[in-house]
Length: 317
Ligand code: FAD
Image (cartoon, rainbow, N blue to C red; front, side):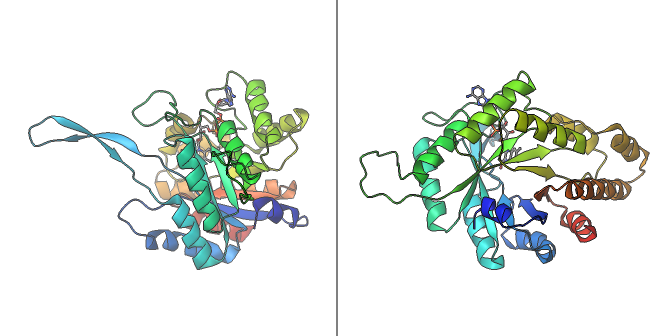
């Protein structure tokens, strides 16, 4: 079932959805099931599975020189989605990125998703590869999420890359895109970022899911700015717990977001990461309750290795 249908049929209820990473190569899918098992009692409407492109790394040879090799640490997004659907009878949303894909490979991936019975995709540009300073599209690939979105929209209209194919089947993907309550780090300003976000929605995105934020006021201001810009699709908040002191610097650096004063002060007072986790759980619960009270349609949790924190929060909700 499509994400947008879940939302439309919720009849005022606040839904929950979870986001997981594919297991590290060599770990096996059981590690992921162990992560998901404690969360399934909360009946998520759908589960997102992130996409991780391959990286170039330098491997030392016996003679002391280095060899450039390509490694993919977390392969399998599409098949993991199918496996989760099969095991838990829950809808899944694979993330699909521009980085590392030619448009032909993207089309093949979308055809595979269709064969697997997956109704949803979250289309993203992806970040720069680890050894690059800026995002560099694959030769013959997409530069922006909007271009990838257009390819999915075309396929939904039965338009494949071989335009002369006759009697083609239309796909029916529900399409999500990313939005940034604190602005995407490359955008010169919020207005410009919103203009590009609107272009994604006008081109056919069914909903927006946000980057994590720790101050709900930023989310509410973002939704207001979206509505003022003529963006009228659901804006699903992305929520993440803090659980280590290291995150005080890692989160702003990696995701270009701020942590509110009250939260960072509480974290700084903690002596152990267990205490930080307690602060993070309470903060996330407070955020979630406030969003629910304000009629937010879906709470989307980035579970990232901390399913028990998310479970404690959703249980309290
Ligand atoms: P875009 O919409 O293409 O925007 C990128 C930048 O370009 C923005 O600054 C925008 O303002 C600007 N822009 C957009 N269109 C144009 C245009 N036509 N001309 C000029 N400028 C333009 N990354 C992964 O690798 N895997 C994942 O699974 C993943 N999941 C994510 C899930 C969520 C909910 C979010 C918020 C992010 C996720 N990311 C993931 C990270 C994401 O790929 C990065 O944030 C990336 O830098 C931007 O992706 P985007 O889809 O927002 O890009």
